[in-house]
Length: 449
Image (cartoon, rainbow, N blue to C red; front, side, top):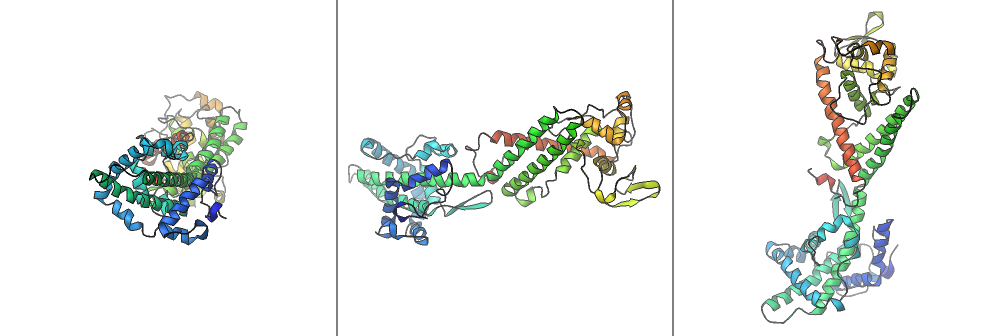
């Protein structure tokens, strides 16, 4: 489809919401006259209604690329701020009879207001950005092309700047008294048209590039809501809510994986964001009876019906299973094909279990969010009355902190604190971005912080 005058619609015109309202301005007579002037100046005449498709894109490169390269050379580039100040001063002397320069997007799009923070009517950074502007920009691994109109208006801006540089030299040489007002007015119209279309395109690109961030924020909210419900529900209804929490955690981890793939290189990110690892880390800290990190996932390890992989298990006599990694024995009535419970998996991996933690007085019925301790005691077969008799002075050799605690169990506490702290940091960061996405720089993949 095409807009008034036969020009193809931009990608932002095909968007929605507030950006659709901004982009409609390209169909106004003033904007279309700027496009028509751009076409005439770049190809030597002709009406815009006769150009279609690749012809419009070719117009944006005809005879202007070398001129842009010349202006980006150090000598010419250093003169741009001074020249724009002179043009701005000439414009302000007759501003009452000239069209306004600043586009509405300059005021309405907070993401790019830093470009105009200096208060200049014609910021040099914007003009240099126009000179450096390519056919597309790359954000978070995505190649996002600019609309053809933006490239046409960019080149028209450069073309209208050229005669002004010659007039400024003549003024400096005392050959003429002042810059012609007509040339200033033409440049001002070209600036406004380019700035409007350029900012619209950049905003559309930013919204598209930040989609993984928005999805991660949206998937985080159900998780936090479910965790809040766990604190309110009584036993045993809370067990069902923990299953819901796990489902929301899986959804958030999937969104987080998509976000990581768009902003981090493959060698710097986790390729498998398995939520069961977070449950295992919470279980590790619950067995130690001490928490140096405050985590919203406290008690998540008590989620029922979660199975862990049953690796390299060989059958021994008496209905016992043997773990080659720890040399420990544990009763197992589970079907190996269905996997292991979290306690059995942690026992084979670390050599410590819920029974050890209860014996050492490190795990009690009130431990963890959503009565997680009560669930673990029930799964281990330990009566609540027995667990209440355990005190901090009671020790157990293989429990966390015991004399026979495995080396793997000792190191696991540090890993658990680090992982859960990182999860909390990501959660807090996403929540802080929730109300500021309109201001966020979309180039997250280039943010070293």
